[in-house]
Every structure is written in structure tokens, then in C-alpha cells.
Length: 153
Image 1 (cartoon, one colour):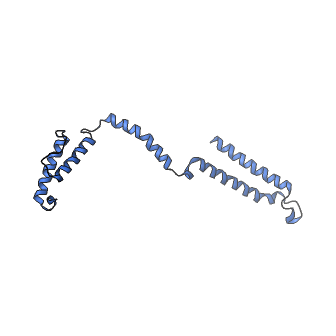
Image 2 (tube, helix red, strand yellow):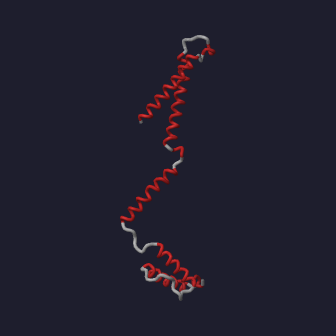
Image 3 (tube, helix red, strand yellow):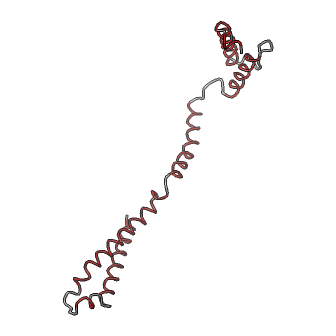
């Protein structure tokens, strides 16, 4: 620890460690030097572990391509799993379908008073069984039309 307070000793420590690291990189040493103090020996052991963990030469292009080919499907799958469920295609289709049916129902409700405009009797005769059947068939027709249109696309 006295190396931390003394700059010249720290420089010597750095030089010795750099020399050791160069030799370890060249695979000339396989263990820490016995005559090194505890701090330097600890650093040398770290250098040895790093030297054995990382290969001495870089991978060639074929290895890099193979690694990318193995990783790409995993990345794609992780990306797809991270997309929220409400953004999936199926839930969007359901949302569009519900919106379309809702619009059709609103359209039928707006048009139903116009269909029975010739009848008399005021508000009590506003919804007759004929109008209800007509409205239900209109909603069913619009829903079937939407389903048919969506199956084509």
C-alpha cells in the first residue's frame, strides 16, 4: 500500500506490471512472480486470469459471421418478447373489429328513426319489432362485410 503514497514507487510498480502483462500476453508466463510483493502479485494474478480468459488473437471473419448468425435469432426473439401485448397484430385486429362494429351499431341507431318515419304514434312506436330486426340484420351485415374484407387482406 505504500506504493499509493510514493509516486516513484508507483511508477516502478506500473512498469513492472506492464512488463509482466506484455509477457503474459505473449504467453511467456503462466503464474505470478514469487518475488513480487502482495500487491504486485495480486495484480499479476489478475493479468494471468485475463490472459487466459481472452484469446491471444482475434477471431477471423468466418467465426464472427457464425457468431452473428447464432446470436441474431436470439436477439430477434428477445425483441419480439419485449413488444407489449397490446401492440401485437392480433390485438390490433380485435381493436379495429370492435371499433368497426361500434361504428356500424351507431350508424344503425342513427338511421333507425329514418326507417320508420312514415309511421305514426310518437315515441312509443319508435322501436317496433320490424325495426329491431332490421337494425340487427344491418349490424350483422356490416360485421360480415368487415370480416369478409379483412379475410381478403
